[in-house]
Image (cartoon, rainbow, N blue to C red; front, side):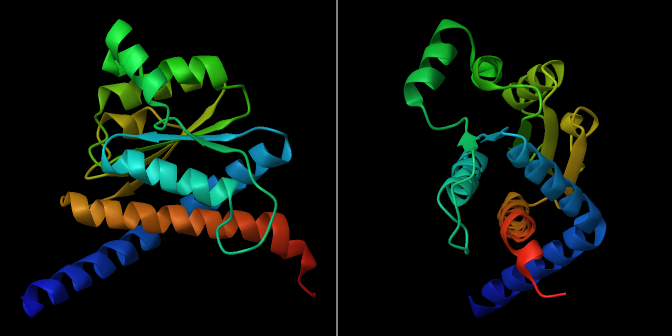
Length: 195
């Protein structure tokens, strides 16, 4: 069993290293887009399904509460948390619309939407991106495998090129944490550093 543990560890490390080597510039771009939204009184909306829904909630909590720094709350919203809204839309319309209807109601031009999908092919996530783009919302995909259909639908795709869902999810939360740290740096640390 130790061998299984060591193999999983090394696989996870390799997946993170490959992701960063391919996406460091995109991580910085995403960070700057979020900072710009926050600086202009806009918000970050995040959504995903299953484990990615949990990641959406986790990252929203890091922004609204705090990540590492003690700092003011930042406007982030997971679209995965209100069971009354989710089940109402799913029951009255379809599961495909559970995020897009929330974006229609809450999204504004200048906001950022971060979608998290290990396959890149979830119908409700694609509907969310279509709605966001129609409303002038910058759409970013944190994706897996080859990025799926979403890779060509979003404004910015950050893709974990791996076939195992657990490794993709591990990189996704690492990426989310990096964005939290970089946003905090740009908003609250960069200008206070000595030259």
